Amino acid sequence: MSTTLSRREWLRKGLFASGALTLGAALPMNSMGASLREDSKYIYYSNGFKELKRPKLPDLSTLKARLFLNENPYGPSPKALEALVNQAPGGNHYSWNILSELVEKIADQEGVKPSNIMMGPGSSDLLEKTALVSFMKGEGNIVSGDPAYMSLVNVSKSCGGEWKAVKLLDDYQHDLKKMEAAIDADTKIVYITNPNNPTGTITNDKDLYDFVERVSDKVMVFVDEAYLELSDKGLKSSMVPLVAKGKNVIVSRTFSKIHGMAGIRVGYIVGLEDTLNSIQKITRGGMGISGPSIMAATASMDDKEFLEMSKTKIAESRQFTFDLLESKGISYMPSQTNFVMFPLEVDGDTYLQKMYDEKVAVKVYKFWDKTWCRVSMGTMDEMKVFAGALDKAIG
Ligand SMILES: Cc1ncc(COP(=O)(O)O)c(C=O)c1O
Figure 1 (cartoon, rainbow, N blue to C red):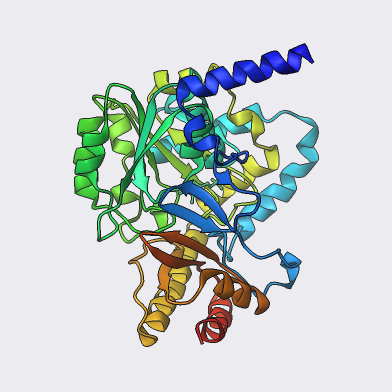
Figure 2: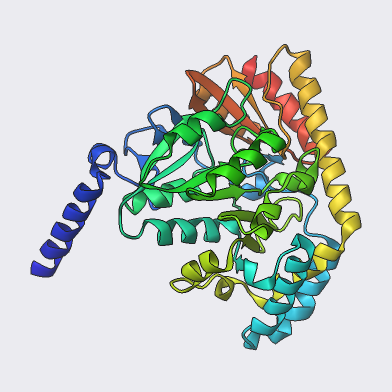
């Protein structure tokens, strides 16, 4: 009893000290730091940004179009699958050797040293570890766009950090001027997702490069490039060259999107050796990746044909979606990713239920006083099923 009380007391003091209870008192946090109300139909990220809880999931295998998690329907590459299976009998061994070979291959491709790479079972792991290490003292703030991808922000908030959310511009790019103005002496991380999730939109690469180069002299800038390979300019607009120039920048990448390996779990960050050491002193990224996953990632990097096919087919589904929405007079955000966001004129819950009734899984958000549907790009067959369901749902 006394242990429980003292722990509770400690927690209360810690949370009050960091200010985390101002919102937390009203809204209990889930394990990701997003706020849930028992009776609520929303997951709250901020006062202005929330996601509708989806209807009770049907058996996922019965879905006709699985368009809610930004997965790649074409992956994994056949070469990755072969490598995965071939490595399985080595499952009795730890995988450090093959991991360091993969690190060298990635470093070579990125134009940095192996010591500039930290691996993880997916990039979420590394976003969260960066947040954990940056905010473990329970103080400081993180500046990001709003809406943003919330993994890093949520863990920062859970540790006691303050989220300084800067609304995206009307053209859905990051408002770099306001973000720079939001930085203060307590800012630990400036987080930019480019292209952004859930909007799918990209920020001008030259403006972003200048911003990151300048701002990283003051504070660490974390650029999440999960979808960059799918964008028009691809990796040409990556911020990795700034790491090579010695700037205080972390860039994250994942095998979950263009490589179609979301369930195989491989991602990495590129950063300064000292920064990565400070994270790896406390947490170990590579320990969480299995040998078969490492070999699958290695093989997938070499399967250029697969990667090109993925990008082309995803772009075709995106164009189909743009044309579909245009034909219905619905505007959409100019996505450069494998998902498209568009506004809904109908009630969000009713829409979501109708889509699920048609066995089509999508997501619905509320922000900027509007309700939005985010649909991931599936195969052309799935997109046609989506088109039929959309007809019924918006009537
Ligand atoms: C912007 C962004 N970053 C990171 C991730 C995490 O992906 P993973 O952990 O599969 O690498 C996602 C997943 O959807 C994402 O949208």
